[in-house]
Length: 347
Ligand SMILES: [Zn+2]
Image 1 (cartoon, helix red, strand yellow):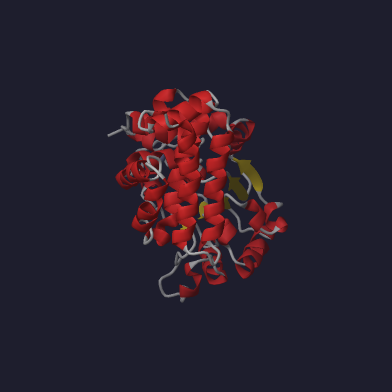
Image 2 (cartoon, rainbow, N blue to C red; image 1 turned 90 degrees about the vertical axis):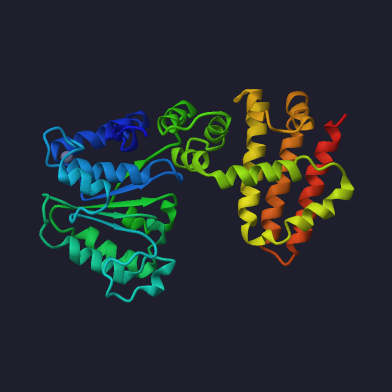
């Protein structure tokens, strides 16, 4: 197991993200933090980790904050600190609240309850922290309730709004928050973190490349056996399709996979992304060691039209899946696109 330092990156590990983090650290140290932050960035880039580390820094009772050993630090890490409240879609702040309607959104009752709880005196720390994950899922009424509080915030309360889609928030909410934009990490950093978690080998390297700067995605992929199992099936059946006559058989095998179609298309796209990286020289050909020969040839000898063709085929399949076209027909079309490209590079 990796040590705790790595599992709980400290705020300074975010410093490569640039001046915005330097500024944040300074205000936390000086106690000049503001009452609302909007933390944005793609999935897996570290929004929740950053929010939790901010909470740990502010609630820690040790000498060198965050000390990592005091009770408060531990409570933040296992989500049980009474002065830190996390809200996310479908989450009930209080179990007696009827919030079933909120299964897919963060509703106004949840926000009202949150506001009433953070407005009480802090239990242990000097400050109460409320983290709203996927804040783009706040519905209209919830956003309005939150806005009122952001306009006249209670003392010593910090709201951390997390989202990958800030445009879904009212501009008036956004303008009341200090914006911390997290950017994709470079591959070397992603690899360093994933390896620190004990992952290694070609799958790990492939995960790092496919994750496109998302540490969360790379970690999820590296540790997800079912992803690699499905990937090898897709490699075998889609990417190694012998000829046109076998399309029907393969489509038939996957015809019941409509519910997991996104997963299938995502994995296929991950593969094509690896091809693109190898083609552009951003990844070594080792990344394609488990690809059938024709694809290696295409990547080495072809221009990028084949790769674009595959990407467009996947995009078309995504769009058609939502339409009235049957899933089997979508699959057959996609397999034909793959087949045509592969045929060009088969000897
Ligand atoms: Zn501590």
